[in-house]
Amino acid sequence: QVQLVESGGGLVQAGGSLRLSCAASGRTFASYVMGWFRQAPGKEREVLTAVTWSGGSTYYADSVKGRFTISRDNAKNTVYLQMNSLKPEDTAVYYCAARKEARYNYEYWGQGTQVTVSS
Image (spheres, rainbow, N blue to C red):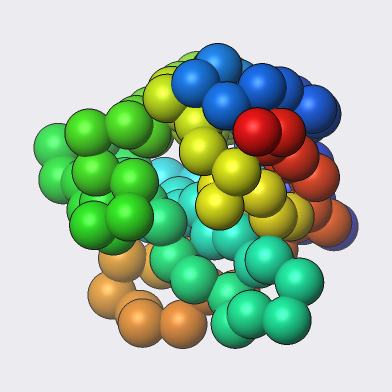
């Protein structure tokens, strides 16, 4: 059974940092793109960042470019999201997800972790 389990969320003041982790299990994730998404109350889910298996290619949404960094440790089947200079508008539930590099849709999702940024 494939599982993605996020951790590291919490409450932080504006300007602070958090590091999210997503531990994947249940299959090999070679040739899988790993991504981070978030969904704030009343808003649609948005893609924040993604990284290929090799780590050679990354994508960042404009809203987080320069503040968030994605990385992955394939030996540990774990992907990370380092979030710096957090803003109140970053408050949301953060999800990690996985898709095959040749596909567009993400097929595996974690349960989400809450990030709350106070002003």
